[in-house]
Amino acid sequence: MKFKVVLCFCIVMLIILFSMMDVCAVSDESYISDYDVLSEMSDTLDLNSLYNELPEEAKLSLINMGITQIGPSTLDGVTFTSLINELLNSVKKESTSVFSAFTTFVAVILIYALFEGFAHSITGDTLREVLSVVCALCLACALIIPVTDIIDSAVQTIHHATDFMLAFVPVMVAVLISCGKSLSSSGYYALMVGAAQGISQLSDKVITPMLNVFLGVNLCSTIIPQVNLSGLSALFSKTIKWLLSFSFTIFSALLTFKTLISTSIDTVSTRAVRYTVSSFIPVVGTALAEAYKTVQGSVNILKNGMGIFVIFAVGAVFLPVIVRLFLWSLSISLSRTVAQIINLRLPVEMMQGVSTVLSVLMAVVICIMALYIISTALIITAGGNGV
Image (cartoon, rainbow, N blue to C red; front, top):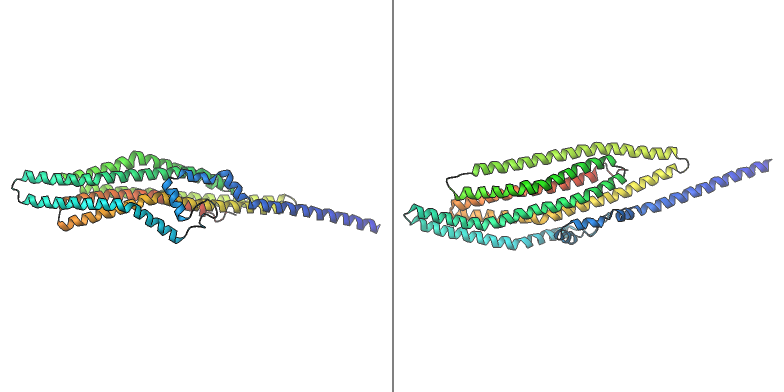
């Protein structure tokens, strides 16, 4: 009798032992597969296709910075030296044309000063006005072509960045859903797609014609002394900058609040799923819950790598136009200083009007770039690691 009891006990213990070995084997296999989640998701989402949405100049800029792939190792090749070198390369690339334009501006101002000196020896007011208008038109022609080209270049850059963000947002939404943030992804998708579409439409139908008209009004106001629109120009500049600040603040606050609330709900839902799996699935429940947690961690690593790549990519897209705007603003400010030294009223006012146009354009470009970067940084940092 005792022998039978011992035999039954041994059989039961052997069954439990083999069951535990099976569970451990399944658990080990799940952990092994978790290490492959990153590469499998990268292949499924085809993250490298995001490179195709970038302009060639931005791709080359990212390579020069040391960014050659999208994922956890995005920043492995990035150094402070590479970032500074890329910035200096952009400055060097734009400085040649800017210096050439600066010499042209100074030459026109000096010729204008020469004719202004001749005009004082002329008794007829009509001839002096003609000389003044001709010199002003020459300076306007030297200014209007490069400035309109800068406006077109800035709008084209905005289009490139918007197309890239429209390609990135669905991929990020898929990754967010994979790591258990379905509510956060829905709010992020709605706001970002709406903002990107709105920016794309505004850049074509509002920004380009508005700045071109603004530039023309400033030049005409300077050439025609009977019409003084400097106050209107200053009011327009302040209004645009105020509207940009207000819109950016509202959008950032809305995205922040929606992300914080939805992330909290997603975190509770994820913990509820893990608790349910761990408590109600016998034997392997704990192992499955830990596997689920590991998979979530892997997906969050992928999400953070994607977000960091997008931040650098957006910066690379906007870097050339920001450097160009800065150098042209500096060139025009130096030209205005030369005109002030010679005490020429008309060139000073003309340069001041063009500087106002460029400052408005710079505000628009920086605001859009900041919107894309901050929204991406917010979505990858909200909720911590999400596990």
